[in-house]
Length: 231
Image (cartoon, rainbow, N blue to C red):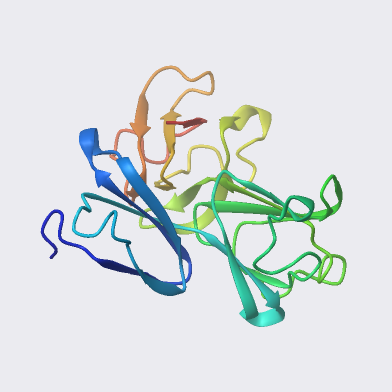
């Protein structure tokens, strides 16, 4: 392991991005900071050399110029919108996107035009975005999402949830039968409240970022209400 203030270079693999800072006050990155995309290695620079106190590593969506994850690649971070006419697709170029790696905890929407047009949404890897959008994409939006599972250990049927309120009695838990939720994957930046009653009262539990692989017996298979919020 590295001692505090003792790093000089960083290597980030594809599918991730890293933020490094000189100050880790209160568990967050402050002071002089720098961000690195996956797929390469670099020195941290003289201004951060041997001054590193904070490192945050997060998964990203990776877009590719060709199908089957081939060709030039570009990372896309959660919570951001990329438009070709603003230079946002410089890594894969406008109308050149053909496939994407989409990790758990991400939802990506791609569109033919910066203003919309033909669009598609993905919550997992897509080896070929299809004829309608292959080499025609000018807009990429990435949102963090919670993934809920029917069984413990992230098994069984699943459903993703962006920020919002989801209630079994109005059909917004459409892919999970009422009172069947047993595990959750919560990405950085989101938090979840689950309750046994569809009005958000009664027995409730709160979950922060991380993989919650098994609910306690008092709430397991009893969820009728789910609230996703930004932390």
